[in-house]
Length: 127
Image 1 (cartoon, helix red, strand yellow):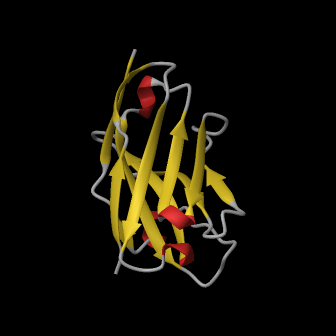
Image 2: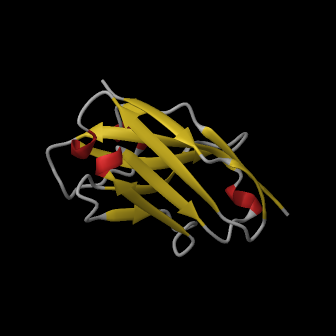
């Protein structure tokens, strides 16, 4: 079992930046692939970014490529999402997710691939 706690959300103007953090506790974080998802009101949850547990491979949704960066610090049991050039359409609740894996280089971008979820953090981008 692993517990995930997100932080770093807030209100920012368009063009601004935020860094989300997700800290895990419970088991060996290093063997978990991690992902960030978001859900806006009235919309389905969508994948934003994902990272393998080795941090070798990453994935980004087309809508955030070039603006968002996912990274992780296994020593701190934390995964980050640096969000730059934010747009109003980035407004959503952002969730981190974890999946235990034996594959050091595999990332997962489908929600159904993940076993554990955080409670979410609100990101609001004003125009």
